[in-house]
Length: 383
Image (cartoon, rainbow, N blue to C red; front, side, top):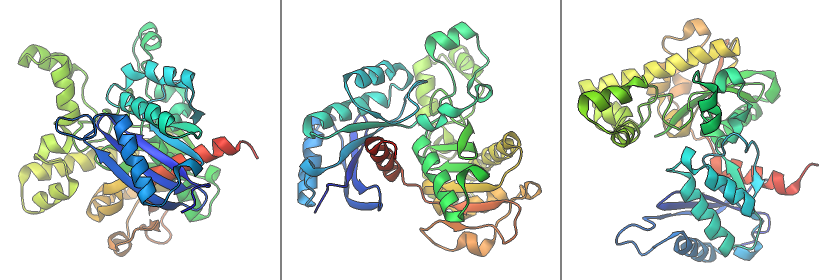
């Protein structure tokens, strides 16, 4: 299978490596896969170098000539304040990504390991695409925390936002689907998966987002608390004797839906809530309340809303949730057509009634395609 026009997209974590070979112009996927348990006890994949060997073997099995690939595109979670666009990877870029590890200690080290392994395995251009890049356009009023200036600047503390590749892809896909110029309308995008985030986008430019310095802030998520009084840290330290690391782990790994309902699979939360489980019912109520809060706030920030878009695993596949979120937002011009909302589909679609003041969409996300497109655009240069 020819790969001259294809880009290998890598999403490397500390113990996993997800890959996809995609043609950016056609969205054709030549092959994809996942290497798990990298470096874990009992695993036969000791490091990312070995994982890349598994990837190249799987490419060969799929008939993809790795020497003919156009490029390798890497998802890097944190680009800090300076990476606002994709970049060709060289030693200086690697050093810069390493310098950002304190801002993303759970994510950037895995990305670095994946980049270094790919540079050794593939003699093609390597492109880093940053999850935070889409939100470097946030105005200072939205990105600045109200803490002392010297602390903010010395430690690079600000709202960065995450899931940027998804928000960028979906906002543009919504414009294409509607046949409207991207710069002609305002929209809110709700990326709802195990991780959740909201964005306010005016004319294609992000002006606010729910995640902050880290992916912990904002909406209720599968295992993350989302917004919480920062004094919880000092309170739990003094009242419960918990150390900062313990509290941080609790808020990131044992909170959100899991902390409220005991499970973080949204389908299970819905099932338990339908069966009368009070904890699951409360979890659903809190989840929906936070979503309504952000939709209302971002409608105000935008000065009015034209399009609301649901995306990602929960957003695309939970019609009950979509209906509940919109149930009390009628005065904002938001409503749902039950038949359209509940009709199963994997395609972009309108779920609001004809003539609604605000168009409500479901648009499947495709972060791998977005990374491939950004990599291709960088390599092709200005036209």
